[in-house]
Length: 171
Image (cartoon, rainbow, N blue to C red; front, side):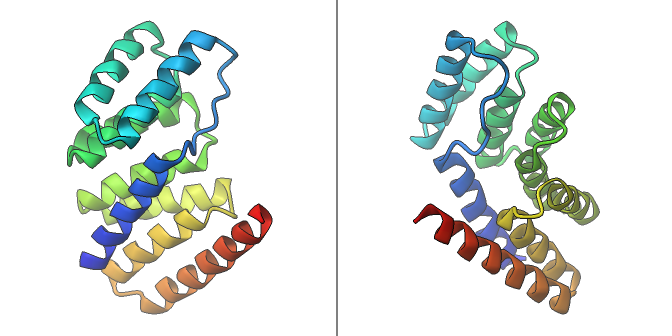
């Protein structure tokens, strides 16, 4: 379980350090600026300020999945995993085809010892995006916790192959 927590922390850090959620809800500059500002604050670990801006923005843009994503990510980093799951639930309701939302919700569910829920989320993320290396990595962590070392090893091998392929594409 310790390995899972370390890996989950790393994945959350990776998600917060990059804008993994592509903005696609129109070209409203004001909304984009707010989301960018929240992401910048969260990346700077100014979680309270980011959370305050996020809550305010949600009043103005209640159907913006990205705001719920950021709120969930921030709450998760603050250790408020039950709140984070609810935020990711709403983000998924608004954008059910984005694999990274399921990965993030699965991480929060794992912290709550909901291994079945986490496994379902990681499976759904892989179904939506079979090239998402983080989904395979996180599913491997759950499999380790469940004692499925062969399955975990297979998932980690796949995650490494996908990560290597992503790295080559970036060059």
